[in-house]
Length: 131
Image: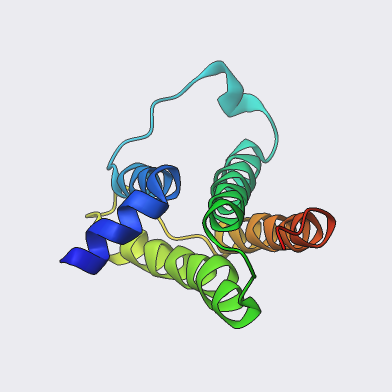
């Protein structure tokens, strides 16, 4: 329990944004808006949600650590968000009683956002070293 609280204290915005992604992904109904007519708006939304969230992860990591552990960053800031995205797509397909559908292109958009955030995060760590 102590480790969980310490983690939330170190990464408050990241945790909040990941919880928001889970809630939004499993909400049964998505309201229609004027933006619904924009081509690929759902893919852009996925790209921005995951890219923005993972960018915050990198910034909060930089704030809390003197030297980057690239293996941990690869796992927690790149691989796990993509795996979570795949899990959420499966949950949407099989656990929302037909209200939501899993889409592999959503997973691709999420992975693209995470990968771009990781590339920018690596660049940020190289350009602004703390030590």
